[in-house]
Every structure is written in structure tokens, then in C-alpha cells.
Length: 98
Figure (cartoon, rainbow, N blue to C red):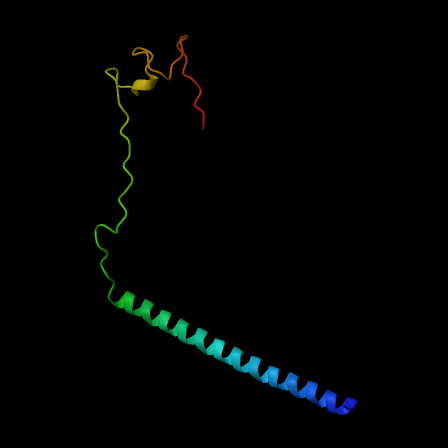
């Protein structure tokens, strides 16, 4: 086989490959554009008429713990008179570790 024929075959293969990849790229771009348009239409429809979420799906607000106050009106764990756990035997407030 001559070098020219071999070269022409290789160029032909490269050209076919290029055509295939370009077709695939055009197809991918078209699909991406269609998905984006569908997503935008769905978002616009949701804005026009928002769906109500069922109560079970809604997240419940976290429950805040109520601080227990002692008879002296202080937080029970920090009250010196009640002997709270946040006070050491010397009557000082213990350090709070984070």
C-alpha cells in the first residue's frame, strides 16, 4: 500500500471521527438547552402557583430548652445558695468548656 493511500485513509477516518464527535456535541448541547428550558418553565410555574407542602414534610422548629430557675431567681446550676453543679466547693463559678 502506498504512503499516499494510507495517508488518505487516515485523513478519512479522522474526518469521520470529527463529524461524529461534532454531532454528539450538538446533541449534548441541544439536550442541555431543553433541560434548562424545562427547569425554567417548572420554576416559573411554581412561582405562579406555589404548592403547599404537607405538614409532615415541613421541618419542626427545634425545641429550646427552658432554663430552670431556682427560688433565688438564678439559673439553678449556677446558684451558689442552692449548691448548683456549676459552682465549685470554694464558691466560684466553674469554667465553661466549649
